[in-house]
Image 1 (cartoon, rainbow, N blue to C red):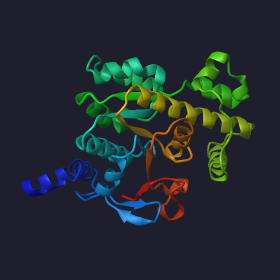
Image 2 (cartoon, rainbow, N blue to C red):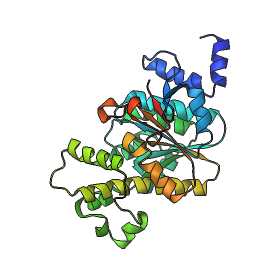
Image 3 (cartoon, helix red, strand yellow):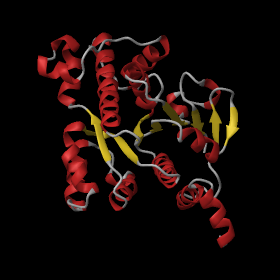
Length: 286
């Protein structure tokens, strides 16, 4: 690629970086394609980034096992950082209580072997899927923020309902209830079926999902309040990143603006033709 083209792509708010990532995955150096959910029009990365610059939180959903999804996430992180203004990365795969370890990693006070142990303690997806994101954050001192909650609490709600939590646990996720619309209820019921969960109460399962979404939303909101002017890019599963998931809980708890980018995932019935702007702002169609 000639210098003139490279400079042009750099000026397009980070498109050069995304092209390099896509090229490495055999996509070829071409701009990724998006569908704008509000009117089903096609959009390029510059348009998506222009809107992302105006948001406080940018959700980039993922299928955890998809390398292409993580490459897109890293491309968005790089592009928004290059566009100016401080950014942080919110992570589903780390708990809020892991923040000290995350800070040690991004400040260079923890080596990779030790950080991989922290990661493997939290998440079952192979390290290799996320390693480029983590290394970029370390090398550029981009804060990594643990958003999740103890799985012990999730399991307790799943088994016995939200009301079974102790007063200390309730302080972490106050006021959770199974308050969802028909579409999200259908998603939760489908998730129960796909995970072959038998003998469990739908109400408990729904409350557990709400605890999960609510805790991550509250931790994101708390970070933004303490760090005004920082944009958070949230990396979480498609179901959590869906507007009805974490973004809805953010909206209920703050005035922060969110932009939601979801990849097409036909197996999860997330295809551009079947979504609208109640689901996402943009769908990445590769």
